[in-house]
Amino acid sequence: MHFKCVYKFCNSLVSESDFVDIHQCRSMIRTGGKKLFAWQDKDFYTIEGKEEGNASRLRIENFSESLLYNHIMCTNGLFCCSKKYEECVAICNPSTKVVRYLPRLKEFAKIDYPGYYYSMGFDPQEKTYKVLMTVSTRNWVFTLGTDKSWREIKGIIDFAVTRNNAVYISGVIYMLSYAEGNAFIVAFDVKNENFRIITLWNSSYHRAYFYNTRKVNGKLAILDMKNQTQNEGWEKHIIRIPLERTRFCNYCDGEILFTKTIKSRQFIRLCYDDTEKRWREFIIKGLPEVGLVNGVYSYAESLFLVEKICNSS
Image (cartoon, rainbow, N blue to C red; front, side, top):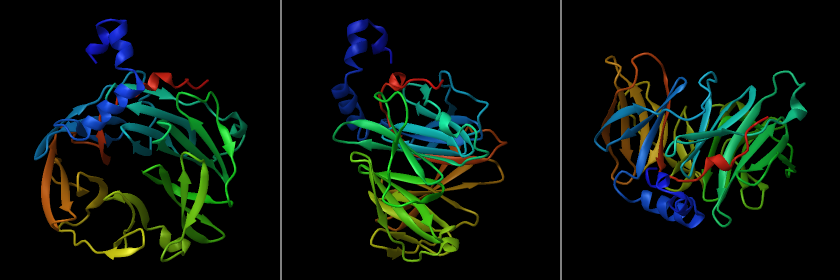
């Protein structure tokens, strides 16, 4: 960030797509390149450290603190922040501390309480980010840095998203969805902008209420909060959690993350090594004593220019 302030040539150099790609690739392997991002109420925090971490509040340019986002999705170092019943989606880069808002879809301005479901993916060939918006049974796409407005696309079937519970893996966005009382996974190919269906081992919509999509070891995993975790191919994996009221959070560097708040209000991250089948604790200090921690995410630093995104009107 200091290098960008030297003069115009340096600024343009670190903004080049090749430089951005190289920087992110190295961020994934170098010390300090990968960080944790914690979301508590309307505030965001970055966390560094492996065995014990201290949280620092992240102050982001032009960020609307009045919006209490209820869904955040991380894709290749960028975060897509949204709220189900408000047509407002923010794209945030915690590494550059910049946020921009996508345009509104005025077509639905007169509908009472429509549900907006946003997810974000990355096309590794074109090196572009795309945001998918689902409203009722219709879908729109917005390409960051290219589109000025939303583009409606057609799906193979009419489906509805169960809730903001999407995950991005290797060019594909996976969402829990349903149609005609049956639940299934909808896979959205970011590059080709088409859909395909993945069936579940139990397609009951009522059963799917307890499912959550996650990425584990580079594969799609479904966490069954009533029974067990299962991954694509639907192999069953049972994890015995040592503490009560522990919540599955994310996957980072070969470990499955679980979160827990103790009486002293320090936030504990339980880590389960899926290969060695062992647990360890990671205590995160510095978070406010009041407020619910909604999620902890792992991300690699990115220099992607969120400033290229047009602001909402």
